[in-house]
Image (cartoon, chains in turn brown, orange, red, green):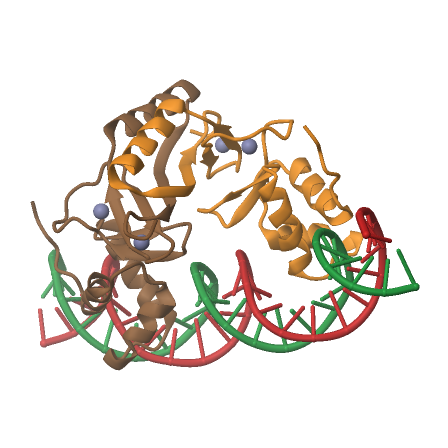
Length: 129
Length: 129
DNA sequence: TTGACATATGTAATAACGTTACATATCCAT
DNA sequence: ATGGATATGTAACGTTATTACATATGTCAA
Ligand SMILES: [Zn+2]
Ligand SMILES: [Zn+2]
Ligand SMILES: [Zn+2]
Ligand SMILES: [Zn+2]
């Protein structure tokens, strides 16, 4: 398994997300990286694009925000679901083969060719509920 | 079962979505309703808010867009999943009790209190694949 | 080494999506 | 009639994402 090095900007963005306790918007990342020389949103979006491709970062569609992958290595993701606490911002990442299978079954029966699936549960985590 | 009448603006927005062949953004709805006197985004967002509460409209988080509910009556929704064709824009709405149960199980084990769950499959429909 | 190509970066401007604030109107129950 | 709840009108603003164009850097083959 080959691992391509991250570029400078990709590394800065990934480190910012990894240090954060919850999801960050692209503009929050930008603000946190101004000290490192970032000046424009595109610098963040371009880095995010590559990090997303490699599965090192996930986009939370219901939040328009991004999180570092909870897994510590660059593994292939199956279908990943996210539980997002609306109080403390904590995000839990989990997979369920049965859910994945059922959605695959639906796609098979319907002739739908799935490219990307989003599962996001909004609510309150055990600590906050 | 009581049914509260929709207001004028709610009716206009719902009709616009019902006539559309796919999801519409709030600003597209606004543009289509300028002839009816709409002038500002808030007129659309306020109508959408009520329509979403009543389950007559759904928000597609991964698209920042809205669709009329595919069911012709104002029924209670279980967990609803959406399959969105990225080529023709067609949206299929379906439910799966097993998926719903598995996610509930995960929440139960984790102590997570779910408020709203989003499932969206992006890809190509049978006609477009 | 040089030129050609792909990839990465810098910057400004603009587009797209959503909310806050405040004023006015309408409906309905007392 | 009047007070409160709901709906509407309008402007201004805030947030999220993309387009366009220029510059820089790395790789590879001639
Ligand atoms: Zn992950
Ligand atoms: Zn929490
Ligand atoms: Zn529906
Ligand atoms: Zn299609």
